[in-house]
Amino acid sequence: MAISTNSSLNLKDFIKTSKNFSVGLTIAISSLFTGSLKGEETPDLCKDVLGTLDASTGAYSKSAADIASDGIYFCAGTPDRFELDIYEMGLCTSNPITGSPKAFSKTDCVESMVKESGVTADLAGTTVDLPSASSRPANNTYTYAYIIIKNTFGLRGSLKISDGSGGIAKYCSSGDGSAVGGVTECNPQNHTETLSSFDNTFSPDFGPAAMPSGGGEVSALLTDSSLIRASSEAGVERLVAVFATNSGSPVVIDDSVSGLEVELQVTDGGYGIEFDRDSGEVIDFGSMPFKPIFTTY
Image (cartoon, rainbow, N blue to C red; front, top):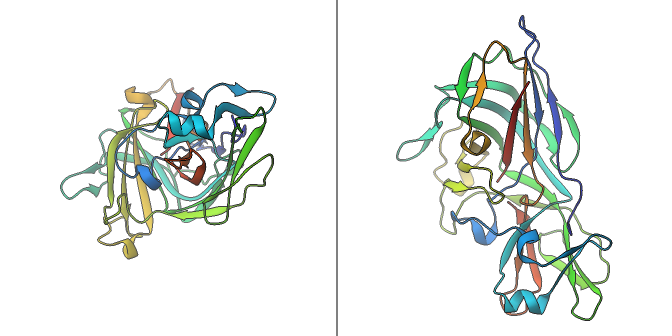
């Protein structure tokens, strides 16, 4: 991959109860919540549209001219850094974001991790210990999962493509998320993205929309710190993201299950890359929605 080979975060949160049930949380996030794709489109993956990837150089075979000619304006790749603050995670038997206007409710959910002050995690390859839940999730069939995070993301990444003359053109993130480079080598810089709306005019609702890498549907809601739907950009403090578990396959917890691992992936989907429509040059980098994979054991 031209952006990064470091692609998943292992968040361990072992719940020890009378039945020795444990929950291991391996989080890797891809976020559809960015730039020109704040609507409900499903972006192409960079690996599917930028040509052949040269394993030795990490560069795609298409040049900027090819990208412009093919009408490629945006694709989803892999970040070097995807840092965020996690406050809570849980499983649900029905979608917890419902109604008109939409609202978040945990009536049909069970918490698997809660930390009021938040846990900072880099989803691009760091191991973080999460606090334990207070009890074992009840035996049930869970069709949705939720995560509550701060609406600010710490990012970094790059992309390599052909320069059209047998060489490499590398583009790197700058401190404001715009792209610099188009040269043989550059160093990507950390940048911060604050999500306060899902559209150019204030909209706190997102989805449901298909995940960019085929991981089922995701919905989201921007809220205040009390998880009430935000009424303005200034009032946004949290992002509640809800996923259909395992592309629509439920998570079944019964007496035979001793643990649950949740993997949220940033590989091929966690970093949005925008191209200039005329030149095909990379012009912007941003966050993109997470793809959770659930495994019981």
